[in-house]
Length: 379
Image (cartoon, rainbow, N blue to C red; front, top):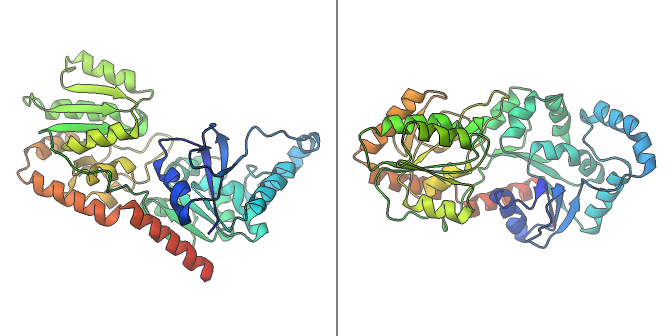
């Protein structure tokens, strides 16, 4: 089935879940429509870059009227119009596209009306920001509500995000939870370093890295062999370094900065505990269901995290990890200490691996995605 993937940016090596769809869905996507093209096309697909295109004078003059009409009809002015719309339509026709999968709800807004006019079935994924922070921006909820009847179906990485959308009146009768998943054949447990911990992710408010650091240092007082590796870059990296330096704990925490996906996989294999204190940011931004946690479970890591977004849908408390409420720094430290002293860690690690194989195998999840799309189109 000739599929067009719609995404914000292409190609981003860190967006493994989107790249997997481009590379493998229905044998490989036929085309990609992106908001920004970064000059690399490792999958050799046809690519349509929405930004940076020349805008004819007539379209510039008509912009206030056409964007106003789009806002009135569709709830958003993000839609292509004029020559850009004609070019996109020609691109989809030229490549014989049969189905469109928008990887984010905000990207679906831009293509769903055109797909509807062309009689092309269009599906949308919701992954996190697009079903949390975006709901507080302008008239996004209203635009989503107008978009839903134009979609053939909706996918979300967690039930939490579907519930978040429903609370704003955004629902679809053909909605399914399909996590991003992990390559369980590549992410495998290896010999675990006792009391080793790992935190992976952007150093931003939503990940609360300073809470994680303070809780780890408190939990491991007197445990000289405990060590935390931190992989990730972002605005809170320097404050995190300063925090560790201020308490003289440089020997217990190593900051690696941003690392390739292969380096993360290698570190997860030998790590015993995965730490992630996710919280809802001040602007409403949340996780969906963190891919890093799915990868950690596949590697047999025990997770210490928060009851946030879709994380409780992945981590079974007391069986594959420990969860605390958001911002509960004392509770997080207590959970880390409890995890390090648990006597059944090996059995829990084996169960975490089994759960990843049963719930998060990306081959299985991709097959389910394809099956639902086929069944929808047949119906």
